[in-house]
Length: 448
Image (tube, rainbow, N blue to C red):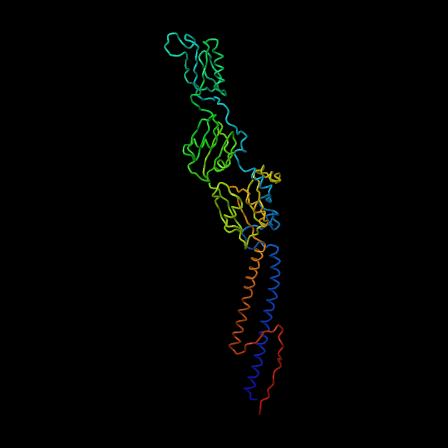
């Protein structure tokens, strides 16, 4: 062998040695990367099953709401979780705002009684002429005299000639008539007295707000009801399910939708003197979050709405995300209502108790409960994601991280393969444990 052939042989052997060990090194990197990915995947599964707070989510998980804390930390506001049962639904229907239950006085107003400021008309009749109030001259036809109208003074009295001050405040016209007749019997000729209301300035009720003729109206003993009073004020300006009626009486107030007065006659109670009726328009709304078809604020578009109808307005539950067993409704209840629901109100020092109602729609009977569960204005509905959704999110996150780590290795491998291909030495396969190459120098004897 001549010297050029000898040198070429030495270069070829060294080149195969370098390429072989280069691919063994790359194979080791790939094996190490694969094993590491397996460990990371196992670790990721452990984290996802335990619940990872680093993943994006629309709200708390169902189990977090039930236990009242998250990741060992107490919630900022204490609340009570109330599972929705038939007894709970019946209780909520009984405590729904009603005029008939808010006011103890539901009977018609009693006989009219004068108050300070009312104007009184008094007419006195005698049996014959020549009496105390009549003369024989016949100047006036009839044996009677009309006392000038007068208002009940600040002491509650009116003044009758020859009778003096007579108590009028808090008395009916017939009671005043009998009192004046008794006083005048000793001086007049068989007197008879007629007392009438000339102008009513007390015993009024007020109708305000979105009515056509707001004002104060005299209370009538003719059994007027709330709708009658609104009709006297011209009726509501806007007819619709967004109209509300507030009745204030003796410092107590209750509000019901206008539809409740019409469709539930027990709410249309009698109007009493000094009542104040306010008619106004305000759309009822609720807010929906979580794994539902749509999220946002929704109008009732009716004077009453059930939970099932509210979920339908949201577009129902998202069957690829929602956990039907974890549907929650947030509401603030008064202490009295919360006590009736079985909540331990002694743990709270506020007049309004935060209550979260839990509805299990995985139970077929849960839809009957949702159909009868009454919604309230400003309620919040939250549908929790299923646990599998959060696990899928975490595995997608881990897969993205592993792809990011693996990309440089793939690029490096492709670079080595491209370089080897350019130089005509493309390996056929990778080996986990490369076969050692004999590095002993090959001695080639040159031919003579």
